[in-house]
Length: 442
Ligand code: GDP
Image 1: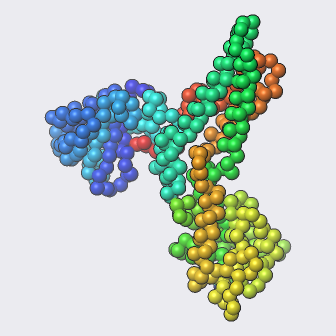
Image 2: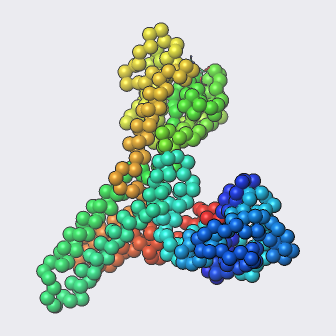
């Protein structure tokens, strides 16, 4: 990427739409207006109606709204022009083709607008990631978390910790540099105390059961149980659409069928698995593989729905999986003469819908305890987690280090690890990894 290119891209979704937004950013951005709408005098940050014309032929392309954001008060911190055109393919193609002919202009790479915003100090890395998550958010809880991160929730937390580390480091270094002189008593001792407190706070932040990451990815819920207890029917009933194939021949669900569910604002990845049963030696190898996958999935799942037939005891394989992360479900309640819930189980019927509201409420409660944002912002990416672990490890080393010089070096490493999360230091190699996740036009 060259910082001197002027980049442009369609920022709205591809395909036909009422309106499409094309963004231009870079030193020659004003040239886009001069070339396509030479008669228009756009005021900064005021929408102006403009006839866009092909600069070569003079042919009209569209009646558009244009916006002019001179640097540095723009999304990227550079000069930015935003063209709001009618969202027809030929209109968009006409504008993009015209822009491509202008000197110093080229199409933007994925994430390049946000990357420039970062490089110009408009956003830190966590805010950029929050912006990406906001675009990707499918449920209300995901949106809340992303918006909070985009608005600096995580950046403030990490920058505050880093500032405190740097301050402690300064005190330690003062003690080293002026060892012979009169410093207020116990400067280094107080710095070490502060490091212990900080280490505790960061460990507390890390000990979050991955709620922020789970919220981004979706809570993984596996439906498990013997063949024919109604697992596929339950998946369909919960998703209210025909996702899984239901049949009365045992062992039909051979692979894992997944559905995404928005449960009260929380994202759920609901997986139907093959029935848990012994497949005899020499039996159907595909079904055996299905059972193996079901068990593997059960181990990874954040929550297990263990299904058995009401009126019968749960089969041993299903009963064996009962635990704190499971909900025991007695299905086919409609077949019982006197429907009473067996001990510890919820009584439902996938066919009539009986008990499903209660099951949804229970799943929502389980999702809330695992994903709820709570008071402090949560770690949302493995990248943050590994840097925080590195920071804590350095602080622990500092505590055991013999000399003040070694303590100071470990604290420096700890501060650098935190700085990498927001992008304050050593980020060049990280940038491409982070911004690759973005799509073009952002
Ligand atoms: P799976 O093998 O566990 O996925 O079970 P299916 O969902 O394929 O269902 C097996 C059979 O049980 C099908 O004939 C379903 O129609 C039936 N079934 C599923 N749930 C219920 C229920 O709540 N009540 C009744 N009466 N039948 C059900």
